[in-house]
Amino acid sequence: MHFEAEFKLLLLSQHLIIYILTDEEERLEYTINQIVNKESNSSIYSWDFIDGYQNNPNYINKAKRSPIEALEFIETLVYETPKIFILKDFHVFMNDISIIRKIKNIKKILQKTNSHIIISAPTTQISPLLNDIITIIYFPLPNIKEIEVELKRLFTLMSIDISVDTTKLASAYKGFSIEKIRRSVAKLLSFRRSTEEIINNILEEKKELVKQTDILDFYSNNHNLKDIGGLINLKQWLIKRSNSFSKQAKNYGLPYPKGILLIGIQGTGKSLSAKVISQEWRIPLLRLDIGKIFAGLVGESEERMRKMIKISEESAPCILWIDEIDKAFSRSNNNADSGTTDRVLSSFLTWLSEKETKVFIVATANNVLSLPSEILRKGRFDEIFFLDLPNYEERLKIFQIHLMKVRPLTWKKYDISYLGKLTNGFSGAEIRQSIIEAMHNAFYEKREFNTEDIVQVTNEFIPLSFTDQASISKLQDWAKSGKVRFASRTVIE
Image 1 (tube, rainbow, N blue to C red):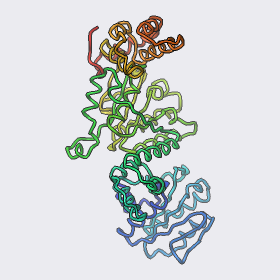
Image 2 (image 1 turned 90 degrees about the vertical axis):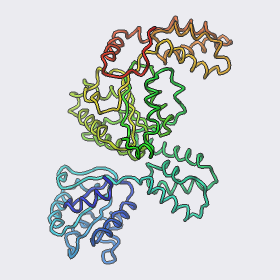
Image 3 (image 1 turned 60 degrees about the vertical axis):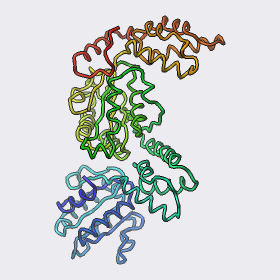
Image 4 (image 1 turned 120 degrees about the vertical axis):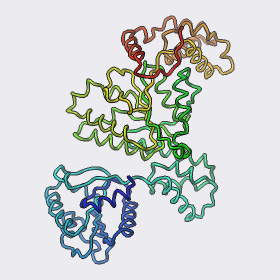
């Protein structure tokens, strides 16, 4: 639901104390003023710890440095008309027993007078004693339309005659607060630059912004579909959905794709595939280290999951890459942490099933047999792909891709056909490593490396399919049971 509609609904349905999560105090206060002035005749009072009450000449500086007095002030007012009290950063005082008691007492007055308290805070910090009387909502970052309006306003204010595409610029700024956009525009547009140069700079700023969250990482990469050897079924699936987030797709009636789960043996291209989707679809890639979600304090893990979801949706359209999801949501973990894993998993799966934003999930897992059945249930992901060890044709392509990168002019002199036969049971990562090892050996001997160097390395190399044969065979048998779709076409060697 849009913030304005949600906020008006809460006011009308007697939600008397509303806790709004935001870092944008100024924009929130402006938005509330706009809504109230349009919808009702309520008076608005704004308070902060340093300056006390503002925006009413009769009460300037009232309750400075006194949160308890700020609440007492609400009790003393004459309520001829409904009133709205915006208390900034009030969350830091809400574990004090006197504040808790005073808020409970004030609730009765608010009820009689159809008035409301709005608490503006950047984080959730509420005493359990107040959970029943406080409603928490998020104030979203500006959408693309709001950003475009602000950009045009700034260009006019700064007298900048600029030829950049404001729609593209607004899309790049998605996930920024208005204040950050203003600072960025002042810096980036001080020199004449092309739209592409400006957008690249914005993406670098966004990368730093996401990194500060300590939950997500912003990945920039230059991998494309040509960097993947094989996986034809997966590639075709991705190509068909490359414009799924476009306006044309929406007008056609297509829902936004939810995501895919990539299951398979280590080194078969699961992580590379996530990077390739980002490049192919031309939308940013955010990587979630799932281990960072789980924290020591009670309730903090759930809060981090909510924060991750919020950041992802504010950065949309984007790819959210969750690497090795099986390590966090293993069946063996569920009973070892007082239910924290279950609650975090439940929150994630609910979002995955219900989300309608342009966030495409790419989750990877090595050991699917340890995953809870809820993750594999139909409807969670659009598709589940199994990435097996590469077949002969795929091994030829993998050798070609890696040799072309290191020897773009002379790669054809290597006997790829022979190497492909020799590396049956090797993963793509192991093939790449065999080439690198051969190069090291030849470089040490101060000569060019050749096919024989790679052959020698592969003859001495012990692939994972040999050292962990039982686990891999078990995984392959599970995949053949028909529960997943193979990322590659079946080729009999």
